[in-house]
Image (cartoon, rainbow, N blue to C red; front, side, top):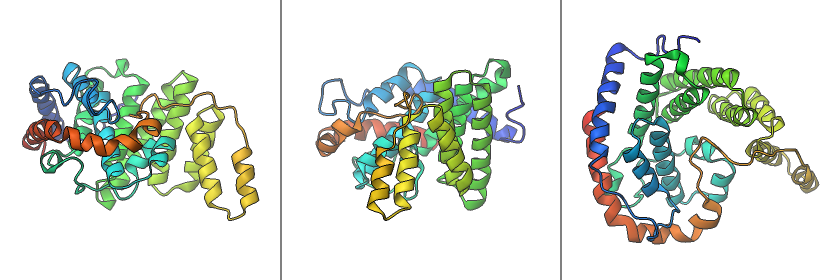
Length: 296
């Protein structure tokens, strides 16, 4: 097993993240539930469920990463982004250009919560696990770490972005090498293609997408078709691309927050905002203030 953390973060950074993760657990246990099952939100955003997951299992880095993904996804949707695009590629949707921190997602108080702090928690918890015993690290741990690094790069300076993406590519590649399950490998190659896309390395992006497609991952097949259709104005060619079929039995993301947006989000989001503003306000303010205080 490689030494994953060589030159990754300074000892001071590691200590700060470790201290923060311990304090976060206590604070999360006191957070009120955003909403109950069956109210206006009806699972469309999933933020209530995700917060409950955080309270029940704050040691799980996936819970922190999903909270970030959910928050950013609906922030963009609320800004008028295409819901259909989210269904095809939620990962690219989250890390794509134009991620704004100024949109009024639900209300002014909730907006004070900075979802980027969840990325720090994800990194801290995975680092803690790897530092404790590298032999017990699973491929999925490296996947979560790689995704968190890629999301961080979207908010970083040009110089830092390159470093973060290179590390994300490195850890995702190791995860692929260690993974034995074909379905998971297919999904990991899809993530790798997204990292290459962020890095501006188109050839490697398409190569990784094609491997993901050949392994049977449907989102990769859809993404390749979308790219090919954008490159031609010929309607007959576009029709042929749509009609081309591949054996892609793996249709959903196992390790990305991906609710049933296609059937729920379009008609319920405005209603959700109206009904949930107060609940999000109090909870978001408390969680946001805590994160701002302990992870700057």
